[in-house]
Image 1: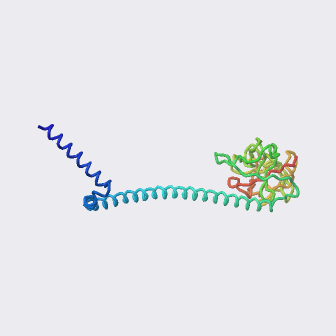
Image 2: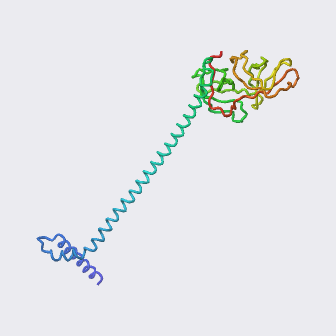
Length: 269
Protein backbone atom coordinates (compact mmCIF):
# COMPACT_ATOMS: atom_id res chain seq x y z
CA UNK A 1 0.00 0.00 0.00
CA UNK A 2 2.80 2.40 0.94
CA UNK A 3 4.58 1.68 -2.37
CA UNK A 4 1.45 2.58 -4.38
CA UNK A 5 1.10 5.92 -2.52
CA UNK A 6 4.79 6.72 -3.15
CA UNK A 7 4.35 6.02 -6.89
CA UNK A 8 1.29 8.31 -7.03
CA UNK A 9 3.13 11.12 -5.26
CA UNK A 10 6.08 10.72 -7.63
CA UNK A 11 3.71 10.93 -10.66
CA UNK A 12 2.05 14.06 -9.23
CA UNK A 13 5.47 15.76 -8.71
CA UNK A 14 6.57 14.88 -12.25
CA UNK A 15 3.35 16.23 -13.73
CA UNK A 16 3.63 19.40 -11.61
CA UNK A 17 7.22 20.07 -12.76
CA UNK A 18 6.15 19.39 -16.35
CA UNK A 19 3.27 21.87 -16.13
CA UNK A 20 5.47 24.50 -14.47
CA UNK A 21 8.04 24.04 -17.25
CA UNK A 22 5.37 24.53 -19.91
CA UNK A 23 4.05 27.63 -18.16
CA UNK A 24 7.54 29.14 -17.89
CA UNK A 25 8.59 28.34 -21.47
CA UNK A 26 5.07 29.20 -22.70
CA UNK A 27 5.26 27.75 -26.23
CA UNK A 28 3.18 29.76 -28.71
CA UNK A 29 1.77 31.84 -25.82
CA UNK A 30 -0.70 29.05 -25.01
CA UNK A 31 -0.17 29.29 -21.27
CA UNK A 32 -0.25 33.08 -20.96
CA UNK A 33 -3.27 33.13 -18.59
CA UNK A 34 -1.79 30.43 -16.38
CA UNK A 35 1.62 32.05 -16.54
CA UNK A 36 0.18 35.38 -15.42
CA UNK A 37 -1.50 33.70 -12.48
CA UNK A 38 1.71 31.85 -11.61
CA UNK A 39 3.80 35.01 -11.93
CA UNK A 40 1.32 36.91 -9.77
CA UNK A 41 1.55 34.21 -7.10
CA UNK A 42 5.37 34.28 -7.17
CA UNK A 43 5.71 38.09 -7.22
CA UNK A 44 5.77 38.56 -3.40
CA UNK A 45 8.27 35.76 -3.04
CA UNK A 46 10.34 37.17 -5.93
CA UNK A 47 10.61 40.52 -4.13
CA UNK A 48 11.70 38.78 -0.97
CA UNK A 49 14.30 36.71 -2.84
CA UNK A 50 15.57 39.80 -4.68
CA UNK A 51 15.82 41.86 -1.49
CA UNK A 52 17.61 38.98 0.20
CA UNK A 53 20.07 38.68 -2.70
CA UNK A 54 20.68 42.43 -2.73
CA UNK A 55 21.19 42.37 1.03
CA UNK A 56 23.76 39.59 0.72
CA UNK A 57 25.59 41.50 -2.00
CA UNK A 58 25.57 44.73 0.02
CA UNK A 59 26.75 42.85 3.12
CA UNK A 60 29.57 41.35 1.10
CA UNK A 61 30.53 44.79 -0.20
CA UNK A 62 30.38 46.21 3.34
CA UNK A 63 32.56 43.45 4.76
CA UNK A 64 34.95 43.88 1.86
CA UNK A 65 35.14 47.63 2.51
CA UNK A 66 35.87 46.95 6.20
CA UNK A 67 38.74 44.66 5.22
CA UNK A 68 40.06 47.27 2.80
CA UNK A 69 39.82 50.02 5.43
CA UNK A 70 41.63 47.82 7.95
CA UNK A 71 44.44 47.15 5.46
CA UNK A 72 44.70 50.85 4.58
CA UNK A 73 44.74 51.77 8.29
CA UNK A 74 47.58 49.31 8.94
CA UNK A 75 49.54 50.79 6.03
CA UNK A 76 48.97 54.32 7.36
CA UNK A 77 50.16 53.27 10.81
CA UNK A 78 53.30 51.69 9.34
CA UNK A 79 53.99 54.81 7.26
CA UNK A 80 53.41 57.04 10.29
CA UNK A 81 55.80 55.00 12.42
CA UNK A 82 58.42 55.12 9.67
CA UNK A 83 58.03 58.90 9.39
CA UNK A 84 58.40 59.31 13.15
CA UNK A 85 61.56 57.17 13.11
CA UNK A 86 63.04 59.11 10.19
CA UNK A 87 62.15 62.41 11.89
CA UNK A 88 63.86 61.33 15.11
CA UNK A 89 66.98 60.23 13.19
CA UNK A 90 67.11 63.51 11.28
CA UNK A 91 66.69 65.45 14.52
CA UNK A 92 69.54 63.48 16.09
CA UNK A 93 71.76 64.09 13.06
CA UNK A 94 70.94 67.82 13.18
CA UNK A 95 71.86 67.92 16.88
CA UNK A 96 75.14 66.11 16.23
CA UNK A 97 75.96 68.45 13.35
CA UNK A 98 75.23 71.49 15.53
CA UNK A 99 77.50 70.16 18.29
CA UNK A 100 80.18 69.35 15.72
CA UNK A 101 80.05 72.85 14.24
CA UNK A 102 80.25 74.39 17.71
CA UNK A 103 83.25 72.27 18.65
CA UNK A 104 85.03 72.99 15.36
CA UNK A 105 84.68 76.72 15.98
CA UNK A 106 86.50 76.30 19.30
CA UNK A 107 89.31 73.99 18.20
CA UNK A 108 92.89 75.11 17.49
CA UNK A 109 92.69 73.89 13.88
CA UNK A 110 95.69 75.85 12.70
CA UNK A 111 98.08 73.80 14.81
CA UNK A 112 96.93 70.22 14.32
CA UNK A 113 95.45 67.80 11.84
CA UNK A 114 92.21 66.79 13.50
CA UNK A 115 89.79 63.93 12.89
CA UNK A 116 86.34 64.20 14.44
CA UNK A 117 84.82 61.07 15.99
CA UNK A 118 81.64 60.10 17.82
CA UNK A 119 81.64 58.16 21.08
CA UNK A 120 80.02 54.75 20.56
CA UNK A 121 80.57 53.17 23.99
CA UNK A 122 82.29 53.73 27.31
CA UNK A 123 83.51 52.01 30.45
CA UNK A 124 80.50 49.87 31.54
CA UNK A 125 81.64 50.04 35.17
CA UNK A 126 81.01 53.78 35.19
CA UNK A 127 84.57 54.45 36.38
CA UNK A 128 85.38 56.78 33.49
CA UNK A 129 88.44 54.77 32.45
CA UNK A 130 87.92 54.66 28.69
CA UNK A 131 85.74 55.53 25.71
CA UNK A 132 85.35 53.90 22.29
CA UNK A 133 85.09 56.06 19.17
CA UNK A 134 83.90 55.33 15.63
CA UNK A 135 87.24 56.03 13.93
CA UNK A 136 90.13 53.61 13.43
CA UNK A 137 93.13 52.74 11.32
CA UNK A 138 91.14 53.23 8.10
CA UNK A 139 90.80 56.89 9.15
CA UNK A 140 94.51 57.31 9.92
CA UNK A 141 94.17 56.91 13.70
CA UNK A 142 97.26 55.53 15.46
CA UNK A 143 98.05 54.30 18.94
CA UNK A 144 99.25 57.18 21.16
CA UNK A 145 97.30 59.91 19.36
CA UNK A 146 96.04 62.64 21.67
CA UNK A 147 92.28 63.12 22.01
CA UNK A 148 90.82 66.54 22.75
CA UNK A 149 87.56 68.50 22.90
CA UNK A 150 86.58 72.17 22.61
CA UNK A 151 89.50 74.59 22.92
CA UNK A 152 92.19 71.95 22.95
CA UNK A 153 91.20 70.31 26.24
CA UNK A 154 93.04 67.00 26.56
CA UNK A 155 90.85 64.12 27.75
CA UNK A 156 93.04 61.11 26.92
CA UNK A 157 95.02 59.12 24.38
CA UNK A 158 94.32 56.37 21.88
CA UNK A 159 95.35 53.03 23.38
CA UNK A 160 93.93 50.44 20.94
CA UNK A 161 93.20 50.83 17.24
CA UNK A 162 90.93 48.67 15.09
CA UNK A 163 89.95 49.20 11.48
CA UNK A 164 86.78 51.17 12.22
CA UNK A 165 86.97 51.90 15.96
CA UNK A 166 89.51 52.93 18.61
CA UNK A 167 89.73 52.79 22.37
CA UNK A 168 90.62 56.01 24.18
CA UNK A 169 92.15 55.81 27.66
CA UNK A 170 91.04 58.83 29.68
CA UNK A 171 93.22 60.94 31.95
CA UNK A 172 91.25 59.58 34.92
CA UNK A 173 92.48 56.04 34.13
CA UNK A 174 95.17 54.89 36.66
CA UNK A 175 97.23 53.61 33.70
CA UNK A 176 97.36 57.09 32.15
CA UNK A 177 100.36 59.38 32.72
CA UNK A 178 101.02 62.67 30.93
CA UNK A 179 103.80 65.21 31.41
CA UNK A 180 102.39 68.59 32.39
CA UNK A 181 103.33 72.02 33.69
CA UNK A 182 101.50 74.78 35.52
CA UNK A 183 100.74 77.72 33.27
CA UNK A 184 101.53 80.36 35.91
CA UNK A 185 104.81 79.19 37.44
CA UNK A 186 106.07 76.56 34.98
CA UNK A 187 106.02 73.89 37.71
CA UNK A 188 106.51 70.50 36.10
CA UNK A 189 105.24 67.04 36.96
CA UNK A 190 102.94 64.34 35.63
CA UNK A 191 99.19 63.91 35.81
CA UNK A 192 97.77 60.44 36.33
CA UNK A 193 94.37 58.95 36.91
CA UNK A 194 93.03 58.06 40.31
CA UNK A 195 90.84 54.99 39.79
CA UNK A 196 88.52 56.82 37.43
CA UNK A 197 87.63 59.38 40.10
CA UNK A 198 89.89 62.27 39.14
CA UNK A 199 93.28 63.53 38.03
CA UNK A 200 96.34 63.88 40.24
CA UNK A 201 99.18 66.31 39.43
CA UNK A 202 102.09 64.33 40.92
CA UNK A 203 105.88 64.48 41.22
CA UNK A 204 105.88 68.20 42.06
CA UNK A 205 109.13 69.14 43.79
CA UNK A 206 108.80 70.55 47.29
CA UNK A 207 110.65 73.65 46.14
CA UNK A 208 108.31 74.33 43.22
CA UNK A 209 105.40 76.72 43.57
CA UNK A 210 101.90 75.39 43.01
CA UNK A 211 98.67 77.12 44.08
CA UNK A 212 94.97 76.41 44.10
CA UNK A 213 93.45 77.79 40.90
CA UNK A 214 96.60 77.28 38.81
CA UNK A 215 95.90 76.08 35.30
CA UNK A 216 97.67 72.92 34.14
CA UNK A 217 98.67 72.25 30.53
CA UNK A 218 100.70 69.57 28.73
CA UNK A 219 104.43 70.25 28.72
CA UNK A 220 105.21 68.56 25.40
CA UNK A 221 108.04 66.57 26.98
CA UNK A 222 108.08 62.98 25.71
CA UNK A 223 105.13 60.78 24.93
CA UNK A 224 104.15 62.42 21.64
CA UNK A 225 101.60 64.79 23.19
CA UNK A 226 101.97 68.38 21.95
CA UNK A 227 102.59 71.23 24.37
CA UNK A 228 99.81 73.59 25.44
CA UNK A 229 96.79 71.26 25.64
CA UNK A 230 94.63 72.20 28.57
CA UNK A 231 94.27 69.60 31.34
CA UNK A 232 92.46 71.35 34.18
CA UNK A 233 92.64 73.56 37.24
CA UNK A 234 94.28 72.82 40.61
CA UNK A 235 91.61 72.36 43.26
CA UNK A 236 93.61 71.22 46.29
CA UNK A 237 97.24 70.55 47.28
CA UNK A 238 98.75 68.06 49.72
CA UNK A 239 102.08 66.23 50.24
CA UNK A 240 102.70 62.83 48.67
CA UNK A 241 102.53 59.73 50.87
CA UNK A 242 106.34 59.69 51.22
CA UNK A 243 106.45 63.48 51.75
CA UNK A 244 109.11 63.80 49.07
CA UNK A 245 106.86 65.57 46.58
CA UNK A 246 103.74 67.68 46.42
CA UNK A 247 100.51 66.47 44.87
CA UNK A 248 97.58 68.47 43.51
CA UNK A 249 94.06 67.44 42.62
CA UNK A 250 93.23 68.72 39.14
CA UNK A 251 89.66 69.21 37.93
CA UNK A 252 88.95 68.95 34.20
CA UNK A 253 86.32 71.31 32.75
CA UNK A 254 84.67 68.44 30.84
CA UNK A 255 82.76 65.41 32.08
CA UNK A 256 83.86 62.40 30.06
CA UNK A 257 80.65 60.42 30.61
CA UNK A 258 78.65 63.10 28.77
CA UNK A 259 80.95 63.46 25.76
CA UNK A 260 79.53 62.63 22.32
CA UNK A 261 82.07 64.16 19.96
CA UNK A 262 85.87 64.03 20.26
CA UNK A 263 88.81 65.04 18.07
CA UNK A 264 91.94 63.02 17.50
CA UNK A 265 95.20 64.88 16.84
CA UNK A 266 96.91 62.97 14.04
CA UNK A 267 100.13 64.88 13.34
CA UNK A 268 101.61 65.08 16.82
CA UNK A 269 104.41 62.51 16.31
